[in-house]
Image (tube, rainbow, N blue to C red; front, side, top):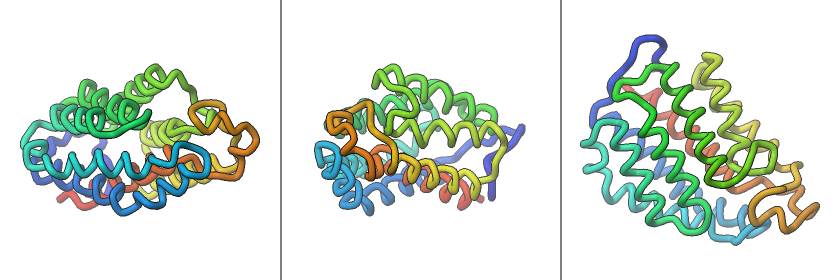
Length: 211
């Protein structure tokens, strides 16, 4: 598969779901030090460590998670993040995955993915009392959702995620720990935006590997 399915819905099997969550976990674990370094500049300095802990828990339970239908697998992975990831990241990423699980059908098409991602972003906004433009993970997720809804291909979605994460560098944070720094938050990539970009890239890569 080289793109998200269009109008025809596709049910993911256990191998596909294992590929999907395995790719997400490997990416976050491999970039844990980078995420921590970004967070040390403008946050608590623990984003990489916390995210690594959460996705190591997902990896440990991957066979059981992959055995579930996609919606239930998303909810289970989201619950792992809520339980294992400290700070704000656990509830926010857990909310993202669990809302996707509540919204997506077992055999989603592109329209389902766009609608579920929109619902998940709204849930993250409500959980974090945040909006786009405040130098957070939303500044990557929102343009990615728009790209999915427009029908962009996987390569374009990856590029949009990378551009969106880079665009947080000159932004002044107005939400989260970084907002305490005021103008000193300018010049640093938001660690949540970077972890969101990494997860989007991992999902695009996994979808590209599906038969």
